Amino acid sequence: MVTAPALKKSPSIAPSQPLASEDETDVSALIARLTGEVNQIACEKTKSIQQITNQMKMLALNALIESSRVGAQGAGFAVVAQEVRAVGQQVETIARELESHLTTRTGNLKSSIEEMTNRARGERMVDLSLNAVELIDRNLYERTCDVRWWATDSAVVDCAAKPEAATVAHVSERLGVILSAYTVYLDLWLCDLDGKVIANGRADRSHVAGASVAETKWFREARGLRSGDDYVAGDIECQPLLGNAQVATYCASVRERGKANGRPLGVLAIHFDWEAQARAIVQGVRVSAADKARVLLVDSSFRVIAASDGQGILSERLPLKLEGKPSGFYHDASKRMIAFHATPGYETYRGLGWYGVIVSGG
Image (tube, rainbow, N blue to C red):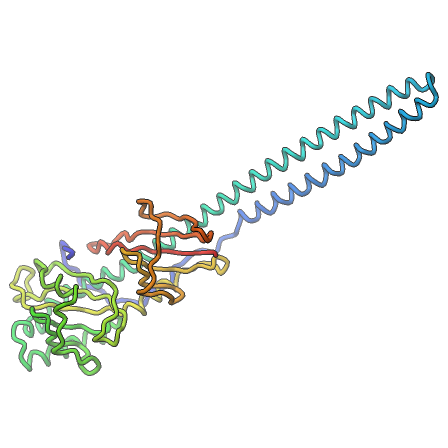
């Protein structure tokens, strides 16, 4: 049960829009490439220096051999040859040290760039995860407004107070008008306090009148709401009475005279068309093809409730490693990047402990 301080009139819902992200130049990849080229050039040049010093050493060795043949007369030439040989060795040492230092430094630079790139990518994925769950939060906040508002409708209150043929027909017509304007709902049900569906907005499609929902979790919680300002937000489920469609059910109590503190008369349940709306959100997240990303929404038990690839919905559980953090990213055993962000809620809707998740790579 969630308590809200004030009731807002719900605006009509526009179709979910894709999440925008700017095309970014991969500067880090460019730097990494240039670093690799510098490292390659350094290695090639030091090898050229080593070849020259090897030639110098060979010339010095040949000079020493020739000076030894001429005896004392070649002694001075031998000294010069020895110096040339020593200089060649020094140059060779410097060249090797230069190659070693450059290779080490460019290697460290490349590693740092890769780490920075990975962190930047991870943070971007976390932001996109937040955007996805924020967008659904804002959408579902409007659902909580809708159900509390419509529960005060005079036709709904009158029918809950006296569920006679005339009031049932009138409220069914009224709920149908609401559904024609709010296309994000599959149906609206008015239930009595025993859990029997009195009327619904699409009686021509869903013959649910007379059915009992007394054992559902959302009805039991709604039955115990303390005021008309409270509401129930149900978990995502497949609703058998709606052809096993995936729904998010929101409930408010119908009270005498439509007053928040009035005597309870019944429960209004509205069934949000979850699959279509959630799919538009997760498929609208703009990740590059190179990321090979799967965008998900998961509930508080890490059950997948929306997936950009349409797989595992309501059956797969994602073993998130939160480590006590509301958001972050890490790599799993398969070297996939897992980015997540907990629901921040919106206005009086505090969320249900859901997470936006992006699994990329692998």
